Image (cartoon, rainbow, N blue to C red):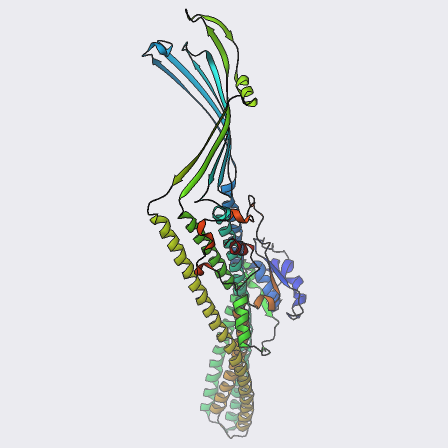
Length: 581
């Protein structure tokens, strides 16, 4: 930590006295970043403002770094899903040889021998419309000892173009691009989850910060209480010497001093634990870092925050990233319904093929009476490909394939499951909205009660201080006992600790309110730097409306398949699935 402080933390200490409103905005990357390398100079103390604590946590907190890796993995998943549209280049080669006795004179030899060598090269491509394209070139060299083959050895070549188009099940960009759209939605869900993690981390930082401030103030209270007890002990000794107090009073004062020393030790231990808790949430992970003293610079006293319950609830339902996550989940499930509906259709595929063939090799001319070789006209593979080039021997085929499962129970059951999943997610959304409303109401009440509690605790502390002054005056005049003075001093310590706790609770109530309404990042001017959806290959035809159709029932949306528009305009994939339905 000593090395890190000079390289990373010390330049920002100039901001320690700057208010959050005037401070520049803090930025944190949504994708993985490199943790700042520690420096080499030493320092034993760090003066830490709340905003500087935010900055360190945004840079070094390990939970945030884990969230960044989750987002990077979700982004890589988008590219993974586009792989279905990557063209496939294929090449093949092979051969065979056979030797077998002839069973007929038509075999052309008593023992026939045949040797074949094959070569192939092709390219196939699946398009988002449900179209399968294939281009292939093949060549086969065949050689035999049969005298009935007048082209021997021979080369047979072919060049073929084929197309298969789904017309019902599997047709359309909506169905075939669904994995990409779902991956995009999951990427945005992960981005929203990262925002949730950032908000939770900042809240933990602030709560740990104020816990440390309160623990340090508690130490001061306990030390002050010990000072009062030691002063009372000195006064009691003088009174015993002069005979105005009994020796038993001295024993009582000594016991009080010992007890308050224990309280100081316990308070200092609690402060050290609170400091370690803050260091942990800030992301201190090197052994030397834990030895640096954190010197907090913020005032514990808070200014009451004015709120409006109705506005706070409306803001929370609009701003909370959890709502965005649920809407993306609904968009994904609605797309799953459309895919499942398409699966209930029969399969009707159009298949077409067109190509050209060629033949080349040595042409052997034999005497028809004797079978003797008259002449051999040399040839080869170039003759076969020349015939393809000249398109001498075309071939074509076209047809339709129709498959319809009788009953189709499996596809119908999947469609029903997806509809139930959608309705369940809608219920989850309503439950989340209910939970958010409850959290906001609790947060607003915590602010209102916390402000009143701060005022009451402050008044109680002032009264306790006056009571101590009055009781000490009475003790000096011999009008009270040191037991009564000790009890009044204890009351003052409790009042001081209560006021500290009231201020801490109000500070926590403020950050809890900002987190509940989803405005913590805006209030603290923290920006999440997210480059957004990546540009991926094979994303063409996504906006061609007639290619998005998923079947005849496409235009007949069930009411439960409409995603409520709580947040609009922020996610292109949400808009894409909205438009496609």
